[in-house]
Every structure is written in C-alpha cells, then in structure tokens.
Length: 195
Image (cartoon, rainbow, N blue to C red; front, side, top):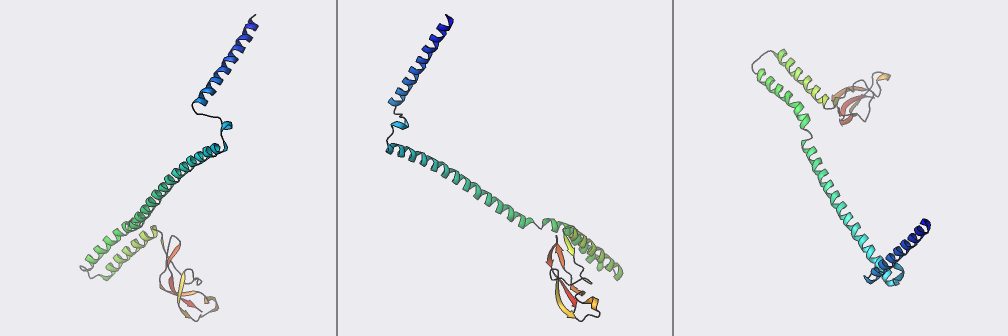
C-alpha cells in the first residue's frame, strides 16, 4: 500500500511541476518575453544587433581604459627616465667630491711650501685616489703599449717603421690614454703604430 501511495504522490508532484512550468511560460509570454522560435527573422536580427552593440560598447570601454592605462605608464616611464638622466651622475659626483677636497687642500699647501718632492707626492696620492674612485664607478684605463693595434680600442695617429719584424702591427707609444666604462670604449687611445 505504501508503494501505491508513493507512486500516486510522485505522479501528483509531476503534474504540479508541469502546471507550474506552464503557468510560468504563460506569464513570460504575457510580460513580452518570447521564445527565440516565436521571433521573426527581423526580430532575431534586431536582437543580434543589440547584443553586438553591447559587445562593441564593452570592448570600446576596455580599449579606452587600456589606452589610458598605457598612456599613464608611458608618461610615468618618461618621467622616471628623465629623473635618472638628471640625477644619474650623482653617485659618480659624490665619489669625486673627496678628491676635489684633497685638491683644494693641496693648492693651499703648495703656497706654503717650497718642497717640490712633497708637493709631487701629495698630487700623486690625489691622482691615485681619483683613479681608484673612477675604477669603482666602472672606468678602466687602457694600457695599449706593446699590444697589437686594434681599431676597436685604438686610433692610430702616426705610423713609424718597425725596427724588427715582431714589432709590426704593435703599438709603440700612447699619445692620449683611452678609457672604457663598463667594458664599453668611451675614448679610443691615440697611439703610434709600428709599420
């Protein structure tokens, strides 16, 4: 008997669900909501057009936001780059300031002394300190004498006859010192080359 009651309850429940769905569909039709099947081709196209317009508006909004965001990024990057260029030499200048102080003291003491050797030693100490500070900033002095001539590092200002076959193509003298900054040549060494 329980099974019969259960089956009857299930059938009644199914009927109630079906009636509720039918009532809901009728209410939707009355409210102006129609199924896609009931639409005319013109109405379908109109609906698709409206959806396309919404999509275009969304994409346009995303594009405008992205464009503004990129423009802000570009301006911020340019500002940071300008700041780096403006203040980029600050570290190097701070490294040189103690050398400048030493030079001022040396000039003051030169007027008070007649000992040329002491003045020379003082200036040599300042020179060595200056080179050390520049080396810490990445500056490297080239020592080309006795090496093969290389146009990547050297600029030949004179060619002289070689005294021996081994000297041919070698740098004999350096007229102006060349420098590299972080392995990049910033000034070529002006040299005399054996021919």
